Amino acid sequence: MDLMQPEDVESYCRRLEAYLCRKNDGHLIRIVGPAFDQVCSWAARGVPIKVAERGIDRYFERYYAKGPRRRPVQIQFCEADVFDVFDEWRRAVGVPVRDTPADGDAPTDEDVTGPARHASLPAHLERVIARLTTVRGGADRSLDDVLDRFVRELDTARAGVKGLRGDARASFLEHLKTLDGDLLAAVRGRCEPALLRQLEAEADEELAPFRDRMPGEAFDRSRRAAVDRLIRERRRLPVIRFE
Image 1 (cartoon, rainbow, N blue to C red):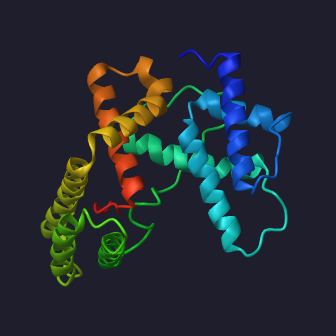
Image 2 (cartoon, rainbow, N blue to C red; image 1 turned 90 degrees about the vertical axis):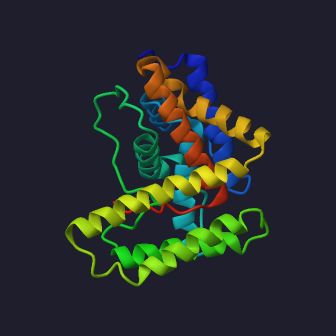
């Protein structure tokens, strides 16, 4: 796969520099020298701009959780989170691993919107129900009827899942996958056409570095999965499936 042209890499770095400036409350941290080389390696791996921004957001969330900030954040500190989010995005949309420089593979982690690592099935359902209830209680009430249906079904199922074993458990986990797809389809169906076009354009931008190595059918599946992921993020929807 062809790498980005120099002007594209420069634009990539400057866009992330501007984003980091906003996250640092206007304090400008220049991406130059080793930091520039580091961010160029993100571009070489095919990390989409929006995915890199979500990785930066994740680092800042942890940073703020530790208490008042004492100094501006450097872009280098965000790399592990950027690669975590990139790996989550890549697995969610099904794009192939892009050839990277021989400096090691990006780290991996579980999708933060998916089941927590080592969480029990009952705890996962409680978490999903809590998230759906929170979304339902927000300012946008257009999804109330959709969310009510899923909350009721999951709440009813929660009481009996602890004792599930073998085929019964496998069947229930498959049902959760179906519900997850049904939720996204229902929410997608409520999206305004203009919003869907916006999300599709964003998905196309994210997938552009991988487009030329994907068969048409695989790209179409990844594009739909990328749009679904953007819908999930915009609506703050949980992942119902449990893996």
